Amino acid sequence: MAADQPKRYIEIIRAVSEMIQNDGLKSGDKLPSERELSDRLDVGRSSIREALRGLELLDLIETRRGEGTFMKATSSYKLVDLLLSFVLKDEQARKDLTETRRIIELEALKLACERITDEQIRKLDTLILRSKKEWNQGDFPVEEDYRFHKTIVKSCQNVLLFHIWKSLVAFNKEAIKESLERSGRPPISIKEHEQIVEALKKRDSEQALLAMRLHLQNSRF
Image (cartoon, rainbow, N blue to C red):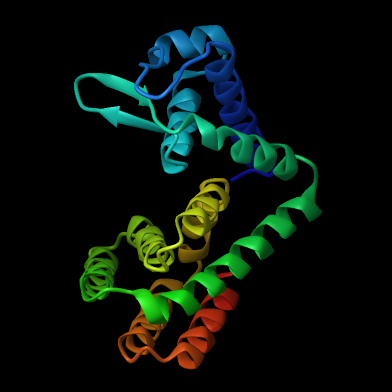
């Protein structure tokens, strides 16, 4: 991804976000179509589609098959606007954002060691199996990687922490793909995921944190 592309992507998310606020849309309201958004903001439909996907990751909108795209929690826009303003500043700001995401993920993991359910652990095992299948078929398990970390953070049972994490990762999800595309990285990443899950199964906070720190360091995002 070219250096200016993430910035452009975030600018479009912000433009769509501002348009939603200016139109006074609230929870349950339907958003304009991709074509209308494209015309109003004077950007391509593919860019609009990516921006909407980002807002959906932030849990601000939802897409209903055959119906369209609808608003969800409008109160979260203050946090999103703050992060958008921050991440657009400079390279140091983006490094700070990455550092903050790592801090949140490690703190969430501490709580997860106490609060994760058996069902969530089974989900992590399933995601690891799906990651192996994707990689064996020659595909990068980007979505499985994202859902793995999402499941762990969600299992900490702190809703605010979870939504902040989602906001941070939504602006940096492309970095997951770039990390996995490095030569030989996918099988190592999957092995690191297995080590994290084994520690979670034992409720071993110290071992889980060691495994996660190593994983985040090796992932470089």
